[in-house]
Length: 248
Image (cartoon, rainbow, N blue to C red):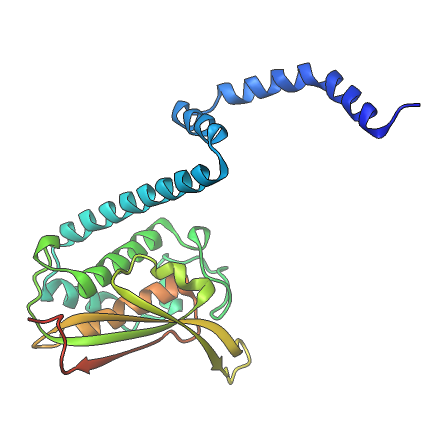
């Protein structure tokens, strides 16, 4: 009398040649470096596999960070560069971006899910990248990144972002994140939240004597919200810090 186990083994033996042939054919089309990585993974124990994955993740983040720093240097941010971005994009609505061919008309409504690359046109992708690079320069830029802003005062930026959408700002460094529950009542009924799962992101930065940085931050955040975060209202505030080690 056969058992389930014996039946399964019999079927596996019958399928094995065909399975091996198809597997070989599939692997033959893969990238050589990918194949090496997979072989290495198969030889590692669980602990080593975690460490291997962490090293790969860190290497990928380092590459992304290096690319961003190169782009920030190419921007060569000055007060004039910030002013030009504000002139072009400050106060623009989502409808403006759709009309300018930056965002597809069928993208999810404000307050819905975060927008992805399929929701943006190539020009929209470029603008989103520029806004993030400029925001990075405004918050963290210095002589090493070709950022020519003479910072004379310390200020604190606080952002409230739904935790599920915080990845849009994962390029920020030297920031503090706090879990917070938020309530948002939309009078139009389009999107309301009761004790929403938010992150409060605090970033200390340097402001210039003529206060160029703050308005630039608002302009870049508005574009990032329109093109990716997709909130009805993205909460952000900036306050002066009287004493800080940031400005020396």
